[in-house]
Image (cartoon, rainbow, N blue to C red; front, side, top):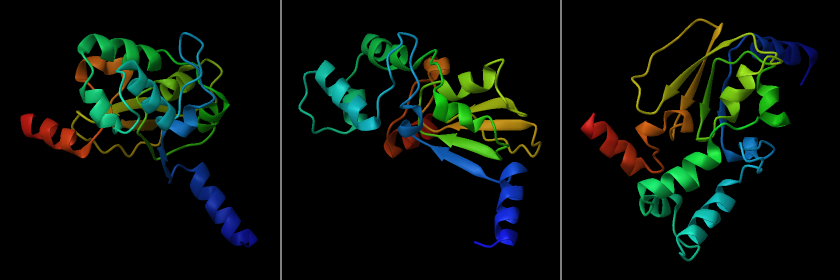
Length: 172
């Protein structure tokens, strides 16, 4: 990459022309309100399988669908609610993003932007999978699109499979 390409890429990044897609890996150095490190997707699936005394052979969607409402509160929402962002998530606030899409249900990203010490130049707007999509062109506003849901909006449930998206949209 020559200097011209580098400067063009840096200009695009700094001016908010990029979207960011994140998953469980970005939260591995974040902690929950119980001061436990957040788990990778595979480790979390193993944890849920153990809670249900299931062999480690089912998908996250399958295991999640076997949870009672009380178990969802204890083993899903409680674990990923009121998170403290780790260094990885904190770095996101240093850039201007067009939009962040996330598969995570934890609120570490929102918490990072809400910290008084956050370096963000953008105000958050959280869009849940259940919301009507709204295009925002104001670079001062950062949409975080929650593809699987968010613990801060737990009454709207979580989705972990394409079939659930389809059923949800049929009801809507």
